[in-house]
Length: 387
Length: 51
Image (cartoon, rainbow over all chains, first blue to last red; front, side, top):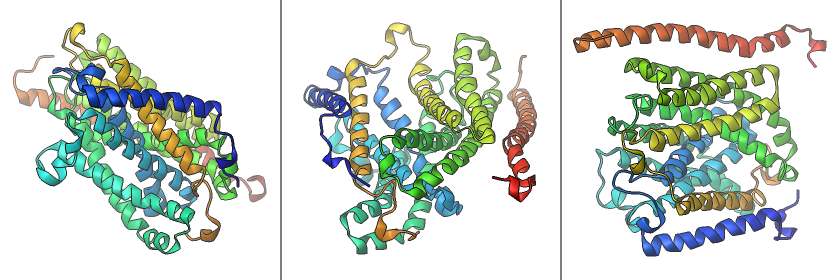
């Protein structure tokens, strides 16, 4: 296996990355010198914008691959998915770290981000629970990821000590994920008059949690597909041999989870007797989301899993990832404040979008740096069969 | 459909949801049967044909 360090740095990918990072740094300076009002379109009606919708809600949902993959492998004993655990943990760790990073842009006084945890905890607030869970889960993911770093650095003792905690960390991670994935949905239960009835439901917490499962599984397939070509040389025989089995198994799990999510979405409409809204423009948009990005991917995953059609599954993973992003945007922006006149509706500014692109670019850059050096797609020669 | 008291509303929506849940159970069985039908065909095949 070779590393990327020998190659020239002036590749097209690096140049694009450099441009995005440079633009992001300029906006960062503007955000922290001139304030939120200068770079965002946020106002009193819309205090949460694209940074919450994309960086936080989508970031947390799409990072769910960490707890789904590790629980499949270590709790349910499906060792055939072991090669997918490290890439999934890495994606989850970077995803959550970037959620915290992006939050520094969004809160008015980022230097007080720790106040709710250590200075004045509001234990009755859902935001407190989300904050505490994310804080703890980032810590858990950092510890879960650390063996790969210690193997790379040759710190055997520390690596072996932390490796013994794997099962406990996995259980802790599942508990924390269940709590905060659902609590992010529960945050919006506090706004029944602001969210369109088709998207508002007392089951929002359940919907957010269930949808995080196919989101995580699809993200593992999607990210694995994207990584397969550029880092093929970093993947060992075990990883390559297990790759197809991971995709087929995860497709089956995602199909069932999406079907369950579809059922709860329909039950949520029935429970509040909101059927009549389906005949409106909002209903048409809701049907696009639920039929096009929940029911259809569930069916396509089932067909792909049945026919062993890897290409179909990979495209379906992309469709599902897009569907989850669409759902989070619908709940937090599109169907939020739906009664306001269009002049008062929120649309993100270019600089807000720029920061989101910057955050994603930071994540991709960190991912590239790590997988090019650490044993993510291969087992370190000193620890072969140590699992 | 008009509801005069909350009890009527709950009776109506709960009834609909119970019917939906029955349909979903059948739907889940169908999805699982569809997804795994080829697995059974592979299991039924003689050993030398499985490859």
